[in-house]
Image 1 (cartoon, rainbow, N blue to C red):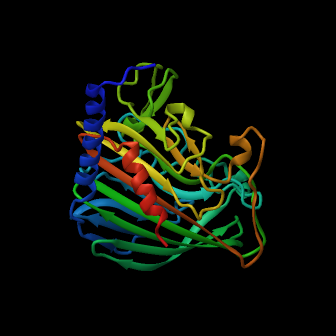
Image 2 (cartoon, helix red, strand yellow; image 1 turned 180 degrees about the vertical axis):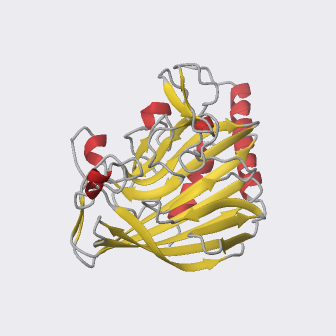
Image 3 (cartoon, helix red, strand yellow; image 1 turned 90 degrees about the vertical axis):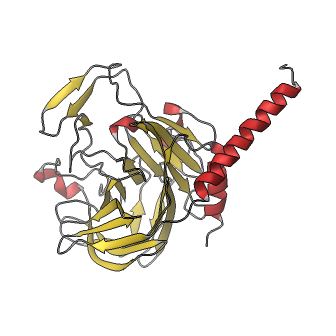
Amino acid sequence: MQKITMVSVLKYAALNLLALSSFYNLFAQTKQLVKVVKAGKENKVNIFIGEKLFTSFLYPDSLEKPVLFPVHAANGAIVTRGFPLAAQPNDPNDHPHHIGIWFNFENVNGLDFWNNSYAIPEEKKQLYGWIKTDRILQTSGGTKGILSYHANWVNQHNDVLAQETTRFEFSGTTHQRIIDRITTLKASTDLLFADAKDGLLGIRLAHALQMPTDKDQKFTDDKGIETIVKGGTDNIAGGNYTSSEGKQGDSVWSTRGRWCKVDGKIGRDSISVAIIDYPANPNYPTFWHARGYGLFAANPLGEKIFTNARSAKNLALKKGESVRFRYRIIIVDGKNTMVPKQLNVLADEFARLK
């Protein structure tokens, strides 16, 4: 048994005081003004926080779903991968359907909304679904920026399976950015979200926030030239996952938790990106579909694969019924990463929202 001394007690107290101090310093900062601005005739809405571009909501016909892309930390660092829309040097070029931050699912009445992209051959497109944004419902600014929109989840023939209404709330301070997403899906026909691995809220992280790997990787530079980097020689990736249940790294995948974060460094600053689940969400707490190569997703509807078929979660909606999902994404930059104690406080705060 470890011997407890006065020195060790004082050290422990000092560390806790330091963590609490950094917490209050970070989250007591003055809120910056948010501007939500439609970009002319483009299917694009820009979100500025404190005069800096935070992200853009993109919904052109050329994309199979609406996305937030790119996403910046408060210090300007881009925390999402650039490929395929704006490839950066040494961008991984796998999974072209992973763009910024998005929300969809792999199996809705047999259609795959998650994996649809320009890379799907035309003869197979009938197996995939589209999410088509048809109108922006609200844009407003202030200490909290609001963007809400309506979209239809459709098949190849534009038959509507579900209507989506999403409300984003954006806020930020000197070292913090927050995205609250509230998405309601209303069934236009009887719907079955059949238990599947790929869903629901997804982020594709920047290369620097990937976990180091021993596997060979393929990268594309900004001129579209591909290179292969041998396993163990990638000197850019340096991220790591931590969940609310104390899981680390690859062990986070397929486990449940009310929050999960990835930490890494971009330039000289530490970057933390966290997703917090909401207690009223279906199948709370969510399973984490968090992969070392940069996919960071919360998927409450993949229970079968995540539990090795010990149980399953199929979400069925009758025509006219609705389901709501609510998540919070927090991005923090600075000298220190967010610690579990801070995230537990933030998760408690988020859970109290009505």
